[in-house]
Length: 179
Image 1 (cartoon, rainbow, N blue to C red):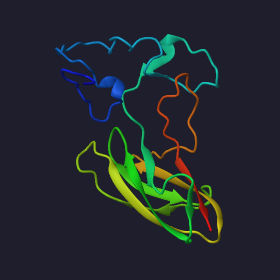
Image 2 (image 1 turned 45 degrees about the horizontal axis):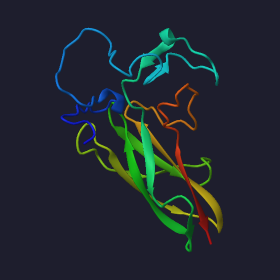
Image 3 (image 1 turned 60 degrees about the horizontal axis):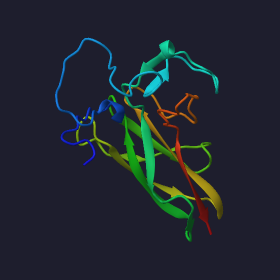
Image 4 (image 1 turned 90 degrees about the horizontal axis):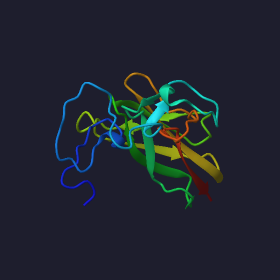
């Protein structure tokens, strides 16, 4: 079993903070420095860096919260549609707070329409969302999903570069073809 005998799950924090093979708990007054938590592992540069930049270890900080993110679970990428309307649904979450708004687009982000968003079952639960899209004519479309949290922070169009590619939370996009 992965993580036996016990795994500590820290809600809202990344999996790197949810320790596996837990046999004891220590209270410490220092930053997490356990195995695989040194150097650049599970850390982000403290400031934006250009792609390929060598960042000194001292300029990294541990990832402690997950950014706002959403996923489209229906339809699937590459789906061919025989009618010009479609129900879209998915999940959204954020490490601290809750998702306050959910929007979808079918015109490469030129316009956005609000999707219906369920309340979370608890403070750290994923939130279900759903929306409906009517396509103006046959052709190729990309459906984009964008969540915004209760602090007004939205998923970005793209993320800044970082050495390990962590915290990828840009808009989820899927392609569909309408006949």
